[in-house]
Length: 318
Image (cartoon, rainbow, N blue to C red; front, top):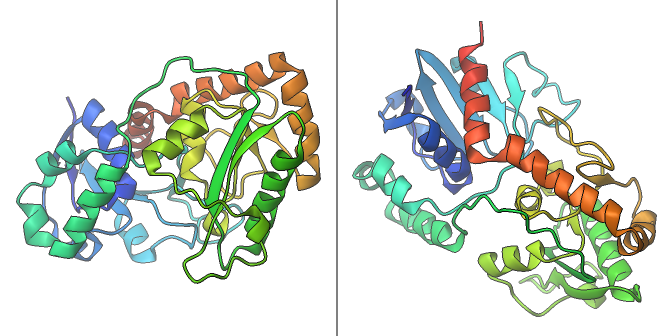
């Protein structure tokens, strides 16, 4: 089994990749002082067969140029399209993923180094966040056709467009006579809900409950995340055989899911009602797209598949 050396301790964003790498390769941690400043950051830095790679799990704000210059390939979970920083030769896109609870693996890989290299409050936060995430499970066929839709999310101060299209989705679901809707926007702590008081929901859903309810939804909106980043929920929804409705991606993917096969794309929120009508009245189409998304996940997005994609690309880099 090929050995991979981890060169920094990442935050929980990288848990999916740590899990995949641990299933396919022999992992070990070896401190490299050149990368000490990247402990507990959104980077996973590693070495295999003398080649260096980094996985960047940040929002799409551009590559870390210092790290880019030090590695053979730079993998970005949010490789923004038409962005000069991400158009550099060594940058590669990644498939959607979601953070999972890997606390036993986390302690096994880094053990005493967690105390030596992380601040106590940072380590405590990591443990808390890991415990709040679900364990990874490759789901079987969970396809369902109901009239229930669940959607819940936060409003973002610097993303008015994202707020608007999600608010319009909430409204479309609430007024549709064939839909039983639950959810809404989570009230902001500062009390400024940007005029979306009618779309608020007072119920708070723990992460695990959120995932369970999303998996039972007739439609899941792949709502844009900060700066156009892909939402964690996309991969979770595909894994659960959920029909995904999406605006065109702002980021690059190694293989783009096809409209009408693995996902349903729209260009305007004015299309919401038509899509809801279609999936209610055409269960065959709904099933085709939902199961197509599940097939996409099973083929490209599992932790094992992503680990192989990353390592094989790195080793094949001339």
